Length: 239
Image (tube, rainbow, N blue to C red; front, side):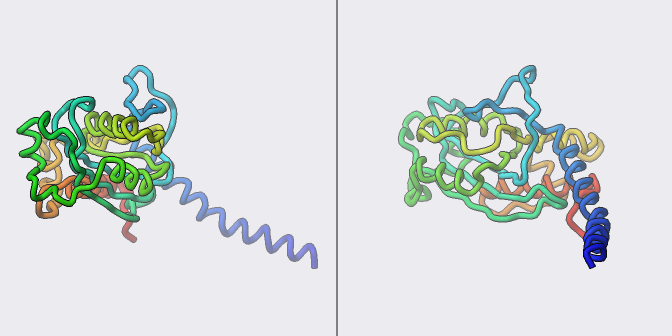
């Protein structure tokens, strides 16, 4: 009887092995797909120079983030809108959860007029905005340990790292980030995309915007572009 049980266990392991192998193969393919956009981070969340990259790989989840700011300088200006889409690192990057909020600026007098116009800022629209501490805390809770992803992530990563510093929060995300724009540059030819801003690429891939321009709408546009690119690479979530 013991021999039969042992053989049964071996047979079950044998039957499961192909499925395990398939999952392992998919994860390896996903890591290869993400590699062109991989950027290593310092412990405080700042992007490391290209010649100081480490070998960390994206983990089990991506937090696709977009920020709107009151200007270009992380030390002088502020995050005024934030949005994030949490997705599993798996075939098709299944969405788990999303969240967005307007953030209350403390020094609107130092804001760049052009940046406020892009964000659609007005005192009326921002009447119910939340403090940075609350917004960053909620984003950290949503994506704790996840890999930050975004479109042209240099500015967003600088402001996220500065937000962690201002709120006294240890960097809550992974020590690697993914720039989806770099993946798009690798996979899309100039015959179909002649410029690599988010709106143009999303439009060429048949992705519609979510109405009013917000950080969450752009986070979703970036997420949708990532999913479309994965489909092109044979890593979609369909049957």
